[in-house]
Amino acid sequence: MAVGLGVVVGILALAIAVALAISALNQIKQVRSELDETQRQLNETQRQLDELKAAAEAAPVPPPPLPKSRSAGLEDLREELRAAHREDAAPEE
Image (cartoon, rainbow, N blue to C red; front, top):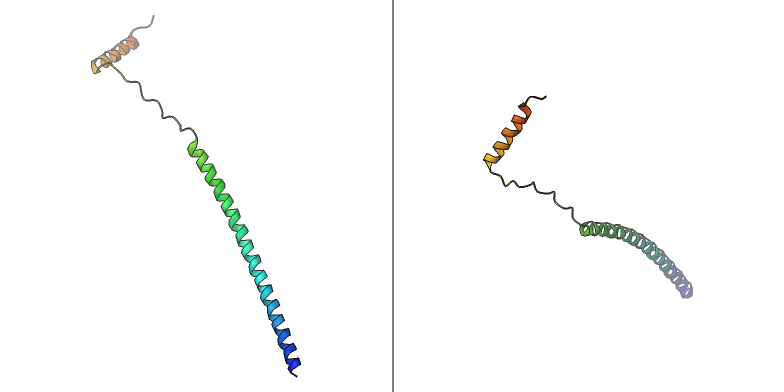
């Protein structure tokens, strides 16, 4: 009877070991799947970062040109305006 009990205990131990091994394999598959997904996300993030770096290193757009400065005073501008009005008011021949 001791031999029969030993065989039963051995079979039970083997069954538990197989169940634990299957459970461990399933957990390994799940972790591997999560690792693959994380790697895909990391690759996408790295690609976006590279694009942002390239955009930041691109030549900056030059600012618009400043308006031309006028060296003439206010009186000179008034005189130019009067002359322009006189030209418009002159009768056409």
